[in-house]
Each structure stands twice: as C-alpha cells, then as structure tokens.
Length: 266
Image (cartoon, rainbow, N blue to C red):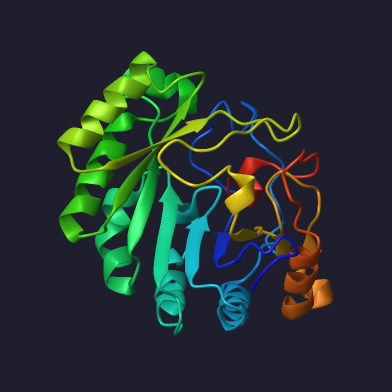
C-alpha cells in the first residue's frame, strides 16, 4: 500500500503495553505514569486481526514494542500467533533487555526473528541514573542469551545527546564490534517540541522514506510518531482506520501533544 506521497507502507509497529520495568529519563517521569485501564489495552486477538488485515494490504514487516513488551503476560503466545501469519517476513521486537535472558529462547522458538535492545551506556552507575532503577547486568546477560539462541541480527539502540562520538556512545560501539552487534544511534527526541532527526545506522526519522504505521497500546492506528492524528480500530474498524491513517500520513513529522513514547512505542 502507498500513501499520497507515493511512499510504500510495509512496516507496522505494535505497542502491546504502556507498562515498563524501567523509568528512563527521556521516556517517563520519575513518579511514573497514569496507566491505561486493562480494558483499554488491545487484546492479543485484536492485534492478530490487525496484523492479518495489514498483511493483506501490503505489510510484511512487524515489530513489537511497548512500554516494555516482555512485561506483558503471555507475550510469547502473541509472538507465536503473529509468526504463523503468512506474509510476515521480518518480525522483530524492541526491548530494554531486562527480561531478555528469561525469554530469548522461547521467543526464538515461537518465531521471532530479531531484537533491538536499548543500551545507552556500559557504565553501571550511569545506566542506573538513566533508567532510574535499572541494573545493567541482566541487559548484558540478555543480549548474550539472544546471541546464543540465534536471534539475528541484534541491534543496539543507543540514545545520544549530540554526537555518536560521546564517550558512552563510543564505549557501546566498541562493545557492539566485539560481540557482532549492530549499533543504531538515536538522537534524543522530544514529541511535544517536534525534535527528531534521522537515526544513524538505521532508517528511522527520515520522513522522505518513512514506510511505517503504528498501532498504539489502546488500539489507535497512528500514521506518524510526530503527529496527533490517530484512528481507532475499535470505533472505525481495522480497514477504515488504516485507510484514514494512509490518507492523513503527513509528508513530514511535526509535533505530538497527545501521546508519549511509552504508549506509542518510539
């Protein structure tokens, strides 16, 4: 399927929860967030129907995000259901890695192809400061386990302030080279101010080649992370929500004043 700017849309990012086991400074306030009621969160059955419909319209790449997707009960079952849908060729997940060691083998056996893991520093104390309550140990163990079970490629999402030559970013890059990992430098974004830039080492943030739509944790199809536009699969139906998102997908992102990273998926 194509939007009105003739961009081929073949990528669906799915936020399965607004819950997270970290409180990263650039994602959540220290006091936490007002969580969605459980009846607002899209069910696995709804997600599967959305994926089936999107594949019929041309989507072949699917990524599960959060919040932190591994905190949602039964996530391996969802992975298995999506992996069995004919036409899904590229199936990944973005995770903070805290629970990855526990789930890596099950995710691989269920049909997940690859993972992106968030890692901004190798310094344990700085990691704790950034995440407010995180321990870097389980993340590194999770990455090692993901390599062991054959999730590939493993991409590391490293948030930077100004440059990929910052000390922490250089250390993370060295770690990636030693462990056959791919690194992606993501300049810190601000939804409300509309601040974003292309990802170094990836294709996110480059509006002229944007190929994605997003399904939020409460069942909205968003045509753009940096836009207030969103269309409910429950109120409009899946096909109409997709149609509206395609029709109103902007040429370039602007600002988002109604959503947050933790319930859209970044």
